[in-house]
Length: 638
Image (cartoon, rainbow, N blue to C red; front, side):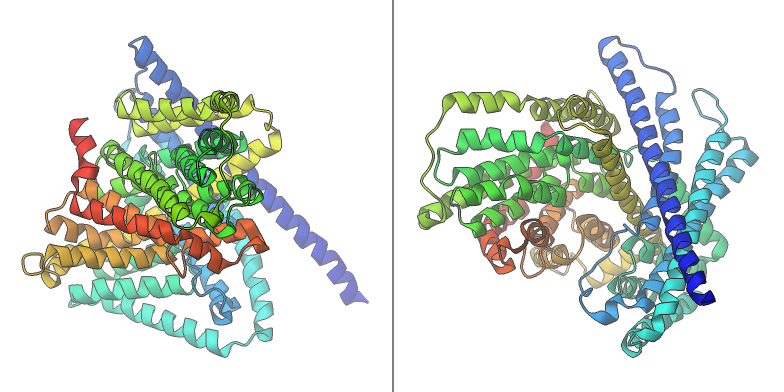
């Protein structure tokens, strides 16, 4: 009787505790994004004053750089609480890869990674106070802001720790009911190998080959058992640096990476562009773009499919995400195409392929990250991606045109063109046109920087959303929450990849790669073809951000060694990874499309539908690799 009473009392307490933690975290993350919107508003005011009144507020840049640290500190912790970090779930369907042992290891490593990040903010407080750091223009003390960032990070760490302790207890209670032998052997082997690597890294005689190869093996082994990519890279990179150079050096490097990430104004463009995309989605811009394109192009054979490609390209330019573009247009366009007797395979394949335009046509979140890693101009990268992005869109339209000519039964007879309807739909699509023109025009025209472009886009899309019929408090808060989740996941993987890249730098990875793959002795064409194949394979498994960050430490020295332009290679890399997202048998966009349409179509049909677009992609990659001027001409003239 007593046991029943205890159980009766404990379960509601657990539920109330969980609910309270969820509400606290939701409040913190939403406040972070609200604060980001306020900073974006201030940036917009500065842009307007500078552009129209030739007046700039002193110290705006450095204040934004400082206050953004509070936003980043709050965002990063939210990804741990909600377990929304980027993982590679290639083997998740196998029971040994999703056992309680794996979950326990993930929780412990994640808690350790967040502790290190929180310590970095706290350490920055002590450093800024000790040295009396001030802003260069306004002369303000910096440590009060760092105190706020550190407090936010530490409070959220405490809440995450409470949540994770509960999870650890739940997993420990469930372990006796699991078949433990296989997962224990697998996880135990990986842990032992990783520990041996760390101990060997502490040996002063450790060879660069061991550090580089062993580092990648240890990191990929942890990623394989579904430890979040950012956590795996941070743990392996940090501990290996600690063994190789000493713990003090490891902590100093990690702190510098965390602080540098938290104050990087180029990186803050990522949550701003994600916010712009979320507000554009919930305000109905995707539907307006699709209706305008279908009204104009629907009178052609295969016109709705072409309209879907154009719509994906237009919305992708606002959204900046392949997966989000695919998911959104899967809901908007698939049903309408099937109802008009389009082949379901062609309809699904068109949207899955069109979604890849989301990351390629600027502004692109992935290109921002690549540009920072490669230390090239973000504006140059955006300019370089525009023509290849438009080329991809045109080749996709050509692929549809050829497909429906060869197999006319895939599409119905074209509808009669209605000039009045087309004109009305085009007028109704004025919001996305204004948004895209202002953001891209201002960015390409040199009116504002990448961060300012993100601020203008986020504020303008918010205004459009507020005055749209779909506006509600619920959708507004959900948009903030979604932006916080995705931004936090990207920030964590960027921090982990930066620490891991530091390890590769200390180990001499660049010299090692050039020693074993000597461009002077090996044909550049063979190296490029090998990289093309590798990236196509990686793109089928890895998230786009993860694919770029994980491979950058190895590939960029090789590209520089061959004398190629890093801006051009960024466009090629992004193109390859995006093609991988629709390549059988594991294209991520295809799985996203399948999740949207459910049982209405089989997976094999979607892969069949993307085949014509893979042919178009192959032609585009050949052109990009053979003629770098396709990407480099526009930056050269601007």
